[in-house]
Length: 119
Image 1 (tube, rainbow, N blue to C red):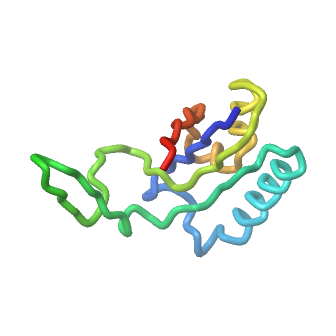
Image 2: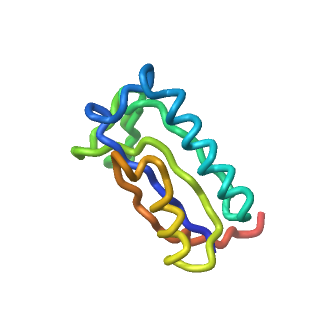
């Protein structure tokens, strides 16, 4: 089964990339390599800060585009991993090994595949 590991951090208190970039890169590279060797890794990326976000909403049939995030949260979505795991316990185990767990949180959620209509 596929699981999404969503990495949330507080952008204001997370390690400053200019200072910690090399160490974080090595930690995440090792974590990602372990997932690949175990056959769990499907995809994963780091996201740009929320200052680069665009929010799209549809109200009364009209699309509204707003610059910036508009969710009021203490932590922001910073990246993700899409993994293959036998069950929720295995997915939680991978989340617990993620370097970001030391300064943020990971939401683990099973993926619910959509059935695609034939074209």
